Length: 191
Image (cartoon, rainbow, N blue to C red; front, side):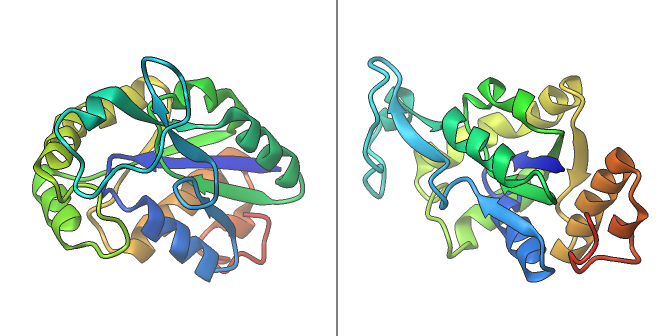
């Protein structure tokens, strides 16, 4: 039916949005945890291993987080009967954007990003100075890049329930199905 890519910078709230969507009965997968993405050696294209914690200097220059097109293609087939959400980010996501019906980009300001990366317990990325510097470098580029791609941009500094309502509203605008509006946020409708 509809496949939605929920993306944004590290710390923007992608995993939290996915968890809230699942809690409301929606199909929502995490690209970091559900086998959709992996580390790739940029020079050789070989699949890498998970980074050491903390990452050594230069590690992020050599390796990139990449999404696996074949895995997303399988999700397209699995999502034919209802809306499905894939939450994550990857440096090669342009290679898979054609598989999604809608892209939603979550954006946050630098202070919120710093706070979330320093305090989150589900992912250590961003605690090491090199990782934090990379996230802060990407942050001002995120919104304009996704706007130029036609994505729906949502301020994710708001409470998670409000952010998810915004995601569901974007799906409703795309599909025209009012069951995804405020009247049906529990996932029992088609949105």
